[in-house]
Image (spheres, rainbow, N blue to C red):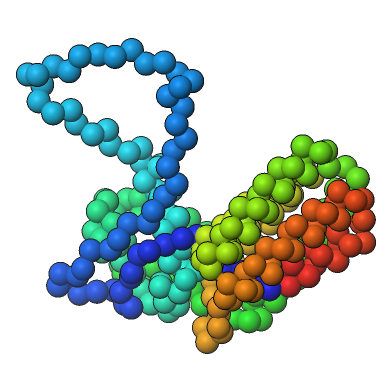
Amino acid sequence: MEHTPMDAAIRFPVRTPPATAAPRLTPLATAPAADTSAARPRTATAPDPAAGPAARPLPARHSVRAQILQALRGALASGELKPGEVYSAPVLAERYGVSATPVREAMQQLASEGAVEAVPNRGFRVAGISARDLAELAEVRAALEVPAVGRLVGAVSEEGIAELRLLAQGAAEAAGHGCRVRYAEADLLFHRALLELSGNRQLVTVATDLFRRAQRPVPGRRPPGTAELLADALEHVALIDALAAGDADTAARLTREHIR
């Protein structure tokens, strides 16, 4: 089945808005950072009353860019960024409450993935995708991933199987919430971990790029519902069972069907 990718609660205009005021967009919720305070004891320091309230540390630029990239990917996957429409980096940046630089950098990354294309002096146009495009991407993915999974049969450790089961469980939970964006991201995490077991870094990079390219919805096609997402997530479990049982034929068939 085609997959549609990451959670985004951001509303974008149908086209590049004029200079008139527009409603603020709700920022994308991101996962909280792991709490490592227990592992690293800190030395308490008394605040200086004369210094006034402590300033909040500014987020690292790469962190802001990553959050913007995540939000934009989610908006593309959900169809909130419309194919054919042009979006200005400064306008989007204003609505995110950040500078235009991380938005432009995120858009350039999306351009390298084929999701958008630069329009001189205007911004970035969302690229369209057709059913034929998705079919061709699935064919290329299958050509790469099916043989790779076949070679993993009998070569994955118990620890590797356990890690895949945890990722499959996370994908099932995302599917159960009916969120296409979150499920697609969990699906990607599963497939990346699976292919990383092959030890082929170039394969992981190329397959990830193909997966990203296939995340945009086809105009006019109904997106998958909760039941379809859950069925797709269960295919992960069946694939892991085949790997654990050393069943190469079933593992190859399930991989091909999952990518379709």
